[in-house]
Image (cartoon, rainbow, N blue to C red; front, side, top):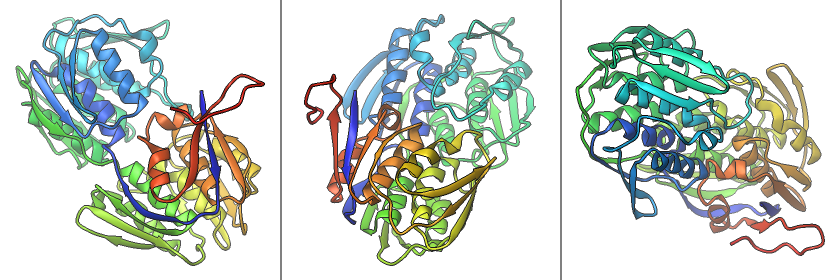
Length: 431
């Protein structure tokens, strides 16, 4: 077990390079199950969610060859139809993508109900609606999803999602690429990583059109062969470092980004008084003066992302005046609020609305990462705070951020990852 120890109050300066997109990688790796051949995938982030998915694929019989730290060959030619890695599946939300991939490839799937961050009710009813429309029979028993296609192969169908769901959009897309005929999915999510998954599938021989719009059309193919693909940069990781500079102050060049994907985030930071300069594949961010109050409402893309809500809220805790944050996606997103209050933040929550009154400074305190993005917010708060902050339960953070400590240190932050030892032992720097 480890924790982060942060000595705050130092403005950030330098350069930070963004890794491959977590939300794309955790869908593209299961999508490799659909391919009869070798997929060479570049720009894979080194995060615990990716490690878990690769272990799950290996337990199903996939051959995984590491080319370098961020490039792997995945060969699922001889993959097993039957699931065996239920304990691993329970640790990760993205395990549900295995259902769509296995149904598409074999016409059957056995996958445990997903884990991941506790953000309230996160049903998979829209996923099941799509699978059922394509001819699958789906049942959940004792925490296991059992899906089967009586005819052996899914059939194309017209599917309208009752709510805009990233997970359902991707999962139905995975199931449909090897289905017989055409599948049309309406009211789909439009996030950049959905487009990335579609591009990956097409590079392997699928026929997916319309990703990034409200309607996706998929013509099923008989087989997908191997190929090469590079995952896009992580929109939320980049946004997190942008939010950190906004809250802490200083100036940093954020490299390896697609600036257009960040418009929904940078627009809000500009409202807060932050200087943003978009370049070809980088963004320069600077904040020297006081932060301005603003209102934030999270929405599906291209709206402000829910995954950036806690990080930006830290800056609003230090802004002049009163800000209002409305969470439009997840019920339990406000679990970070009690941790920020320990540090002196003034936040009142009523349902999905938080009213934040800016304070002159935050004070270091022992806090914990309640989930992935809340954990990133605690790190940002610690970097802002006067004194020392210790962040525990950092395994949440390591699910989605590659080398977060090292990247912040490269920009001048005083942060260390230390081991949490038994009572009476002395902590040390984690290796």
